[in-house]
Image (cartoon, rainbow, N blue to C red; front, side):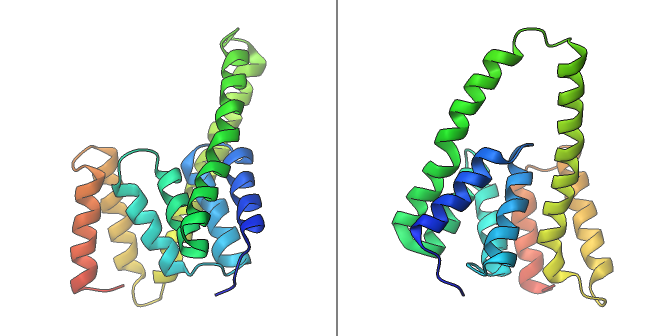
Amino acid sequence: MAVITLAELTKIFLRAGNLTFGGGDPTMALLHRELVEKRGAITSQQYGASFALARITPGTNVLAFSAAAGYLMRGWPGALIAVISSSIPSSFIVLAATRLATGDVQHPFLKAVIQALVAVAIALIASTVWNLVQPSWKPSRRIQVIVLVTISAAATYFGILPPVAILAIAALYGAFIPL
């Protein structure tokens, strides 16, 4: 694995947390590209484990992931820098945007901007799913992966099980039938 400096870590998480639109999934897609694919700072397995652990912890998943990834790369200083860099500046951006957007939410231009952002966010969510599935996307396992993703998505969408239960079931499944 490549060693990443605290300055590089700060730059990556500042960009991911403050210039990525659409919520946690697009941010996670950007972080996967930066940390796994581009820099090799963490492995796909470390990314996947951090992602899963962040999903089962209370609070904001991106911040939990940032803490885990920062810790993997640079220990406690990395965890602290990743969380602060990805959250504090964007909090001020949201405050400013909220002040602007609470004016005329029926304005055609504002409605068009929001609709475009939603469309892009959906594409970025799909990218995140692909990043997580890709290590297991082997010809002999594709049907298994499609079934697991479909069942998990349906259970989440229809509220059949809480995310923690879905992840626990997936962990048990993976322990007995690895992908």
